[in-house]
Image (tube, rainbow, N blue to C red; front, side, top):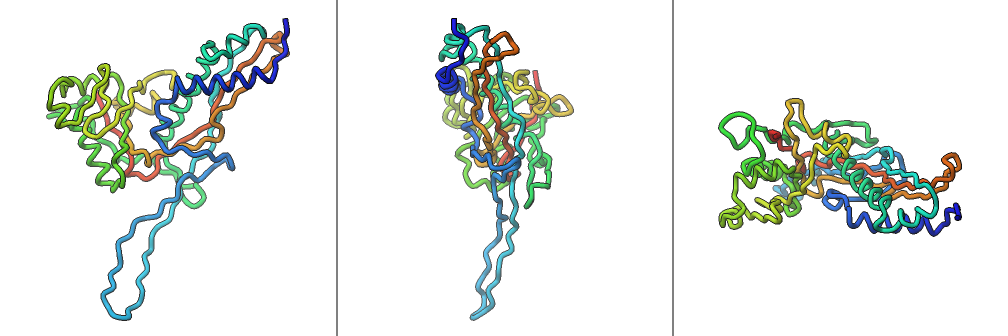
Amino acid sequence: MSFNVTPAMQVAYKNNVELALQQTKSMLYDKVIVQSDASAEKVKVKDIVGNTGPNEANERHGDTKYNNPTYDGIWIPKPNELYYADLIDNADKLGTSIDIQGTSTMTGAATVARAKDQRILEGFYGPVISGKAGTTTTAFPSGQIIAVGTGGASGAQKMNTAKLRAATKLLLQGYVPDMSQRWMVLTADDNDALLTEVPATSAEFKESFGGVVSDGLVQKLLGWNFIHMELDNPLLSTIPGLATDGSGYRKTPFWVKQGLVANSWQDLNTSVDKMAGKQLSIQVWAGTTLAATRTQAGYSGVILNQKG
């Protein structure tokens, strides 16, 4: 029996994890703007130039009037790597573990996919870092939060179409230039609340609300595209706390694609190594270093929903 870790094993594991990631993909990664810049510990991901009104030429041979737009930048600091690691007893087991259907491959790929979603949601809920040197911190704006009582006569309400309309209105009032890629996370409870309010079988649902349902999940409604995931999933680590406000209401995130940017320092980091201190067991490693941030305040928001 050989205990040598060949270069082929490392290549095979990385290739198979990449293939598995396509099957067990991040639910949010392709719903945001993604860039790769590993040049610094803190990278600028967007330059923002303030809007100005036009000047009017109201006199002959008059002096040129110059606009005075504001200039700002959005920054993301490099986070710690999130990773999956496993110890495999010996080399003859490694062959099956790095196979595309192997447990280490599939578990590692799923862990990396969730890690990307976690970092994207952390960036969504977290403060925006801006300024010329990336030293100004701005918390999530209260003006971008849809109240929990929206759509009801009194008291806290679950997800409803009135809240979807309010979210659309908020984006339009923020002068979002392209409303075609609107995204919102729905939990199972949110999905059920929408189906209860607007029956998926009704003609009005499809014609007036633009509703699309597949396998009991609302995929599209009132121009919104839905991502079905549980924000209270403990495997998302930090997110259950970030996605719940001080009153216990769910903070349902919504955004347009240009309103959320992710930067990858290392999209996928893999290794397969023999561990001398572990009786020559094989360590399998898969990780990612990625972070995200909101961009302009008017491009995203939160809906407060009653849980349960």
